[in-house]
Image 1: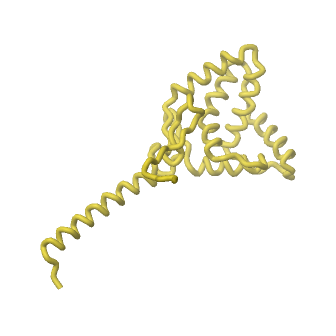
Image 2: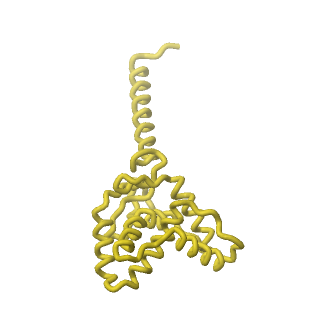
Length: 183
Protein backbone atom coordinates (compact mmCIF):
# COMPACT_ATOMS: atom_id res chain seq x y z
CA UNK A 1 0.00 0.00 0.00
CA UNK A 2 1.39 3.37 -0.93
CA UNK A 3 0.32 6.79 0.08
CA UNK A 4 -0.71 9.18 -2.62
CA UNK A 5 0.68 12.67 -2.58
CA UNK A 6 -2.60 14.19 -1.36
CA UNK A 7 -2.98 11.56 1.37
CA UNK A 8 0.61 12.13 2.48
CA UNK A 9 0.05 15.93 2.58
CA UNK A 10 -3.14 15.50 4.68
CA UNK A 11 -1.31 13.19 7.07
CA UNK A 12 1.52 15.70 7.54
CA UNK A 13 -0.95 18.59 8.10
CA UNK A 14 -2.88 16.48 10.62
CA UNK A 15 0.36 15.57 12.41
CA UNK A 16 1.42 19.23 12.49
CA UNK A 17 -1.97 20.35 13.90
CA UNK A 18 -1.79 17.59 16.52
CA UNK A 19 1.73 18.64 17.53
CA UNK A 20 0.64 22.28 17.87
CA UNK A 21 -2.43 21.30 19.91
CA UNK A 22 -0.30 19.15 22.22
CA UNK A 23 2.22 21.96 22.69
CA UNK A 24 -0.52 24.47 23.54
CA UNK A 25 -2.15 21.97 25.89
CA UNK A 26 1.14 21.35 27.67
CA UNK A 27 1.62 25.07 28.25
CA UNK A 28 -1.92 25.40 29.64
CA UNK A 29 -1.55 22.38 31.91
CA UNK A 30 1.77 23.39 33.37
CA UNK A 31 0.60 26.92 34.03
CA UNK A 32 2.96 29.82 34.17
CA UNK A 33 3.95 31.52 37.41
CA UNK A 34 7.56 30.60 36.85
CA UNK A 35 7.66 26.85 36.44
CA UNK A 36 5.53 23.73 36.62
CA UNK A 37 4.49 23.04 40.18
CA UNK A 38 4.32 26.74 41.03
CA UNK A 39 1.08 28.16 42.42
CA UNK A 40 2.30 31.77 42.54
CA UNK A 41 5.34 33.99 42.41
CA UNK A 42 5.18 37.12 44.58
CA UNK A 43 8.01 39.62 44.11
CA UNK A 44 10.29 36.68 43.29
CA UNK A 45 9.08 34.57 46.25
CA UNK A 46 7.80 31.21 44.96
CA UNK A 47 4.75 29.53 46.47
CA UNK A 48 4.81 25.96 45.23
CA UNK A 49 1.76 23.80 44.61
CA UNK A 50 3.05 21.32 47.20
CA UNK A 51 3.43 24.06 49.83
CA UNK A 52 -0.08 25.31 49.05
CA UNK A 53 -1.53 21.78 49.30
CA UNK A 54 0.32 21.07 52.54
CA UNK A 55 -0.76 24.37 54.10
CA UNK A 56 -4.37 23.83 53.00
CA UNK A 57 -4.39 20.33 54.52
CA UNK A 58 -2.74 21.44 57.78
CA UNK A 59 -5.05 24.39 58.30
CA UNK A 60 -8.01 22.25 57.27
CA UNK A 61 -7.33 19.99 60.26
CA UNK A 62 -7.39 23.01 62.58
CA UNK A 63 -10.55 24.49 61.08
CA UNK A 64 -13.24 21.78 60.89
CA UNK A 65 -15.21 23.44 58.05
CA UNK A 66 -11.99 23.53 56.00
CA UNK A 67 -10.42 26.35 54.03
CA UNK A 68 -10.50 26.51 50.22
CA UNK A 69 -7.09 26.40 48.53
CA UNK A 70 -7.73 29.79 46.88
CA UNK A 71 -8.24 31.40 50.30
CA UNK A 72 -5.07 29.78 51.62
CA UNK A 73 -3.21 31.06 48.53
CA UNK A 74 -4.45 34.62 49.15
CA UNK A 75 -3.25 34.31 52.75
CA UNK A 76 0.15 32.98 51.66
CA UNK A 77 0.50 35.89 49.25
CA UNK A 78 -0.47 38.53 51.85
CA UNK A 79 1.16 37.02 54.96
CA UNK A 80 4.61 38.62 54.71
CA UNK A 81 3.07 42.05 54.11
CA UNK A 82 0.72 41.76 57.12
CA UNK A 83 3.47 40.41 59.37
CA UNK A 84 5.77 43.27 58.35
CA UNK A 85 3.00 45.86 58.83
CA UNK A 86 2.40 44.65 62.38
CA UNK A 87 6.13 44.65 63.14
CA UNK A 88 6.45 48.23 61.86
CA UNK A 89 3.96 49.45 64.48
CA UNK A 90 5.66 47.48 67.25
CA UNK A 91 3.12 44.64 67.25
CA UNK A 92 5.23 41.88 65.77
CA UNK A 93 4.01 38.28 65.87
CA UNK A 94 6.33 35.43 66.77
CA UNK A 95 6.25 31.84 65.65
CA UNK A 96 5.57 30.90 69.29
CA UNK A 97 2.39 33.01 69.21
CA UNK A 98 1.34 31.25 66.00
CA UNK A 99 1.87 27.85 67.64
CA UNK A 100 -0.20 29.02 70.61
CA UNK A 101 -3.03 29.97 68.22
CA UNK A 102 -2.70 26.55 66.59
CA UNK A 103 -3.09 24.92 70.02
CA UNK A 104 -6.28 26.92 70.64
CA UNK A 105 -7.69 25.98 67.22
CA UNK A 106 -6.77 22.33 67.74
CA UNK A 107 -8.58 22.31 71.10
CA UNK A 108 -11.67 23.93 69.54
CA UNK A 109 -11.58 21.32 66.76
CA UNK A 110 -11.43 18.53 69.34
CA UNK A 111 -7.98 17.37 68.33
CA UNK A 112 -5.88 15.71 70.97
CA UNK A 113 -2.74 17.47 69.82
CA UNK A 114 -1.65 20.06 67.31
CA UNK A 115 -0.72 18.53 63.97
CA UNK A 116 2.76 19.27 62.67
CA UNK A 117 2.72 22.64 60.94
CA UNK A 118 4.95 23.70 58.09
CA UNK A 119 6.23 27.19 57.35
CA UNK A 120 3.19 28.12 55.24
CA UNK A 121 0.73 27.31 58.01
CA UNK A 122 2.77 29.20 60.56
CA UNK A 123 2.92 32.22 58.22
CA UNK A 124 -0.87 32.19 57.76
CA UNK A 125 -1.40 31.93 61.52
CA UNK A 126 1.11 34.74 62.15
CA UNK A 127 -0.67 36.89 59.56
CA UNK A 128 -4.02 36.19 61.25
CA UNK A 129 -2.60 37.35 64.58
CA UNK A 130 -0.93 40.34 62.91
CA UNK A 131 -4.25 41.40 61.42
CA UNK A 132 -5.82 41.26 64.88
CA UNK A 133 -3.02 43.32 66.42
CA UNK A 134 -3.25 45.91 63.65
CA UNK A 135 -7.02 46.13 64.20
CA UNK A 136 -6.35 47.05 67.84
CA UNK A 137 -3.65 49.61 67.06
CA UNK A 138 -4.08 53.37 67.40
CA UNK A 139 -4.65 53.97 63.67
CA UNK A 140 -5.64 50.67 62.05
CA UNK A 141 -7.04 52.40 58.96
CA UNK A 142 -3.69 53.94 58.08
CA UNK A 143 -1.79 50.69 58.73
CA UNK A 144 -4.20 48.64 56.62
CA UNK A 145 -4.12 51.27 53.85
CA UNK A 146 -0.32 51.06 53.73
CA UNK A 147 -0.48 47.24 53.76
CA UNK A 148 -2.98 47.24 50.89
CA UNK A 149 -0.84 49.70 48.93
CA UNK A 150 2.25 47.49 49.30
CA UNK A 151 0.28 44.40 48.32
CA UNK A 152 -1.25 46.19 45.31
CA UNK A 153 2.23 47.18 44.14
CA UNK A 154 3.58 43.64 44.52
CA UNK A 155 4.39 41.68 41.40
CA UNK A 156 2.00 38.73 41.79
CA UNK A 157 1.86 36.07 39.10
CA UNK A 158 -0.54 33.18 39.64
CA UNK A 159 -0.73 29.84 37.94
CA UNK A 160 -3.61 30.06 35.44
CA UNK A 161 -5.40 27.29 37.31
CA UNK A 162 -6.16 29.83 40.07
CA UNK A 163 -6.85 32.85 37.89
CA UNK A 164 -5.31 36.28 38.24
CA UNK A 165 -4.54 38.47 41.22
CA UNK A 166 -6.60 41.64 41.50
CA UNK A 167 -6.73 43.22 44.93
CA UNK A 168 -9.56 45.59 43.91
CA UNK A 169 -11.70 42.59 42.91
CA UNK A 170 -11.10 40.80 46.21
CA UNK A 171 -7.87 38.94 45.55
CA UNK A 172 -8.03 36.04 43.13
CA UNK A 173 -10.23 36.39 40.07
CA UNK A 174 -11.01 33.11 38.28
CA UNK A 175 -9.85 32.88 34.69
CA UNK A 176 -12.66 33.31 32.19
CA UNK A 177 -12.58 30.46 29.75
CA UNK A 178 -14.73 31.77 26.92
CA UNK A 179 -14.22 28.57 24.95
CA UNK A 180 -16.12 26.61 27.64
CA UNK A 181 -19.89 26.86 27.24
CA UNK A 182 -21.56 26.60 30.65
CA UNK A 183 -25.09 26.43 29.23
